[in-house]
Length: 115
Image (tube, rainbow, N blue to C red; front, top):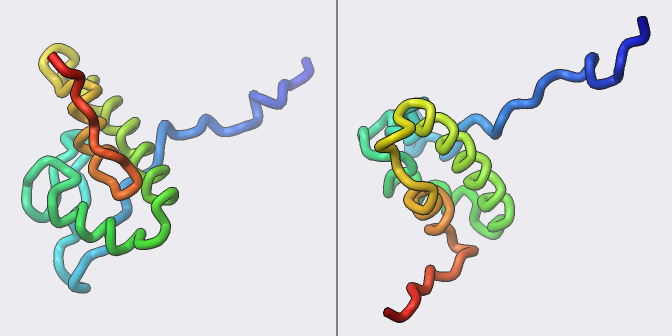
């Protein structure tokens, strides 16, 4: 029986591992998420917490596209994890987008429609 190429390839992950921001100052607990809850390991707030956002902006200074790709991948991972934990009462996709992606320096503010 002939093997297909797809049988030999590994199954890709859904998105990146959260390995940033780097701990600052060195030696302190990093502001990384506890998965699958997506809470900050250092302060317990929903990740990315304010400290993680500041550290990410500094770490990715002048690399806005890289930050956008990283955060978009984590948004995908968090949506997957949080929906599996609580499919009925979890955060909406818009809430997660605002939490993970919309705060970045490469985004314009969301314009609310006139009512």
